[in-house]
Length: 140
Image: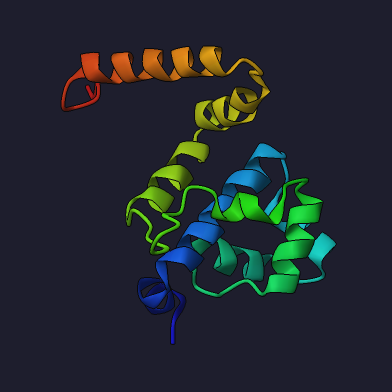
């Protein structure tokens, strides 16, 4: 089975965990090769995990969490706890977000805002800016 077909048939939670792995890796400023070397696997395997083409084992997820300085629960934050549901487009949107230099910078800086109210104001500001752009989100 090719990777694309595997990803299309992947469980939404596997896709979500893979997207969170990619986000955290990028936030830490690490390449796929660096993470793979530290985990004793190939960078291609990291690519497959991040795309959801392959499931990451519990032991590899644990090792990745230690490497990326995150609790294992980080990879599941945001899942609907009642049914394990995932917004189908969420993982793709998160991957697109951290694939831009600005998104990656924002993702790495945002958690450093200690004041919850200040974080809320930043979210409200960004939401207002997006709403002002209209349906095309400022595309020219």
